[in-house]
Amino acid sequence: MPDKDLQSIQTARDLVEAAHRAQAVVATFDQAKIDAICEAMAQAAQRESMRLAQLAYEETGYGNAADKNVKNLFSAVEVHNYFKGLKTVGVVRDSGSVVELAAPRGVVAAIIPSTNPTSTAIFKILIAIKSRNAVVLSPHPSATRCVVEVANVMRAAGVQAGLPPEAVGCIELTTIEGTEALMKHKLTAVILATGGLGLVRAAYSSGKPAFGVGPAMCRR
Image 1 (cartoon, one colour):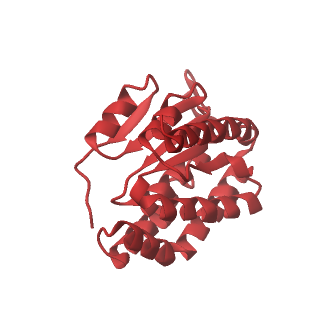
Image 2 (image 1 turned 90 degrees about the vertical axis):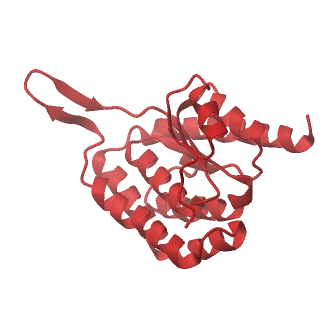
């Protein structure tokens, strides 16, 4: 196996293990702290939306920066506004006969496509942390730099609000083997896979709970 593949596999393993440790801390946060962290990360993504959109366009060649900015803002503003009032800690519903408790899963493997890389990374980071999970992103190789920058921006904002740094990780040397190692790692709890049909099938075949979006993606 080439050195690049081995390096990507080892990086995936290291990131999952670090994220698992960080998630044990995140799982102890109360609703107010989780909401403050998500608010800080969403605001950071909103502030940097246009710059991230330009990076995505320049790196991937898909669409244009203006449209990608709209999608980034949708993830950072509209998606966040939709769920920011939702309870994700403790008792979330009590009907008298049935009590529902919100419990985190652990480490989320977030597979990011080349078509809408920054907006997808933004909302996957937000929903993972809102539910008190940690997240490790695996970008498409042609969208690595812009996704790494999304992770950097949102991690920095989250850390200032009290998030452990390792709760948001990103593979910077992506290969098929590295992505498979991420999805199949024993400490990976759930997979959010956005990409081609083969990737989504691999996610569903990983033995982990997986949510996938396949090839019918918009390339604006």
